[in-house]
Image 1 (cartoon, rainbow over the protein chains, first blue to last red):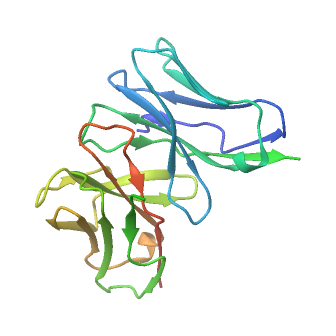
Image 2: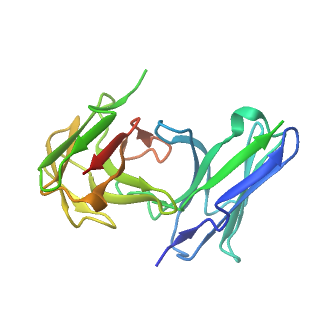
Length: 113
Length: 113
C-alpha cells in the first residue's frame, strides 16, 4: 500500500502565478517530509523539507505546509518561473539517518509562459 | 563539489544476463541507496546500506542483490536480467545525521531486451 501519495500526475501553471503541489501520507510515524525536484536525465535534487513538529517552512519562493491532522502537506512556489518546470517528488522519512526515503509517484509541473 | 557517480548513463542488456550497476560517492557518507524510477510509479527503494558489508532490503528487492565492500562504493546486481527490470536506476547517499544530505547520482537508464 502506498504510504506517500501524490494524486496529481501533472499540473500546468502560468508563469508568475502560484504553483501548489499536494501530497498525502498514511503513516503517522513519519518524522520528516521532503520535496525533491527532478529534471529529465538527472538525479533528483533536494528542494525543501519540514519536520513533523512544524507546520510551515519557507525558503525563498518555496514554502512547505504540513497539516498533521489531515496527514497532508503542500509545496507552494511563488512566483512560478519557467525553470520550475520539472517533476516534483514528495518524500517521507521514518527516522533520521539510515532509513531510505519513501517517495510519492511525482507530479509533473509545467510552467506556461 | 560533492558527487555521486554512476558508472553508466545508458545500458542495453539481454534477458538472462548478469548486470552490474556501479555507484561511487566521494562524501564519506555512511548510507547508500538504490532506487528505480518508473513512469506512474515514482521512486521505489530497492536496497540500502548503512555501513560497509551491511545491506537492507527496501520495498522491491526481488531480482536484485547488492554489494558494499568499500564505504564509497555500492553496487546493484541483477542476477538474471528480465524485461521488467527495464528502468531508470538512481543511486543516492547520505550522512547518518543529516537528513538533507541525500545526494543522488544522475541515473542509469537500463534497457533489457
